[in-house]
Length: 374
Image 1 (cartoon, rainbow, N blue to C red):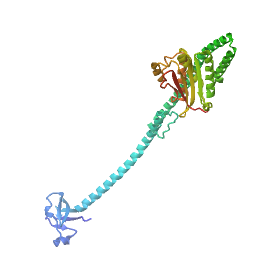
Image 2 (cartoon, rainbow, N blue to C red):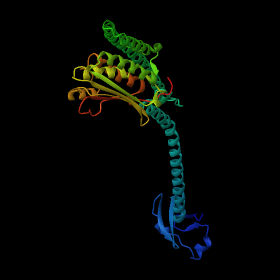
Image 3 (cartoon, rainbow, N blue to C red):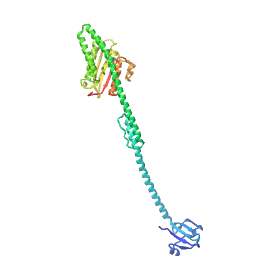
Image 4 (cartoon, one colour):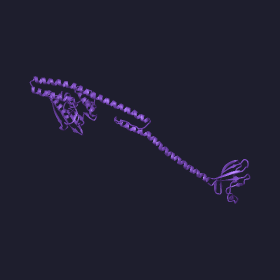
């Protein structure tokens, strides 16, 4: 705004100046003597308390010099404005880049987070989810692959469950086929012996108990029965065994009638009682006692089978506490079957426990859920 141009002739006199009157009256000065003898160039000098930039160019034909005057304060002001605008552009560009990066990053990371969240549910055992990721890049393909893998795992789990169910049913049927004929033969022998001995009333009672025992064992093919039916079943079994082992066996059943209405698996108590008879009481002298009790404790149904027989060896007790029934044979196979059936049907929080044993005999606890309907 303040800059101007003046002309100096070959002799060094100013032949044109926008403020010629000030020059003639010596009110304004120009540093002509500092202009070198060159065709052109520039230098900075102080004129009338201002710092100015001289830019000159010498004409080849005339030798006259055209001089341009620029005030450095205006030049630096333009530079400051330029710097201001430059920083403004940089700041706006930075903000734009951050926003753009956030948007692009969100488009990439959001599907990954959704996939990660879904896979966490799978990690926790939830295989019934369908992973849906809304994107058009590789994460979508990865989600589809995960869906295929989860579907395959779900199919394998279903297949394994069916196989386990079939295996459990086959083992249960095999157990029934193994135990029932053995028990039947011995009971029929006892009935024949009672009849031959003239104890017809006892023979009738044993026959009725045997018929009721097998009727309850079959239970029309149902695997789920009421606890009342299970108690009737074990009562028939113990009644028959007491008649067979008249001088070596006695029993007591103490079950809270309030739990009769609930349902459970059949043949849970009979193998435990059979184990007490054949492994705890049969080989000891005198009359042995079996106590079967049941009630609700802490939101679960708990049955306790206890005898005052010879007890369980410490090494064997240690094994069965970790689920090792390898040393059991005969009725012990039924004990293992009961433990496995409970866990397979109700879950691993239920099953058979072997707590600290009494000084004499054996105590076994069965923990079952409260099932109000089959």
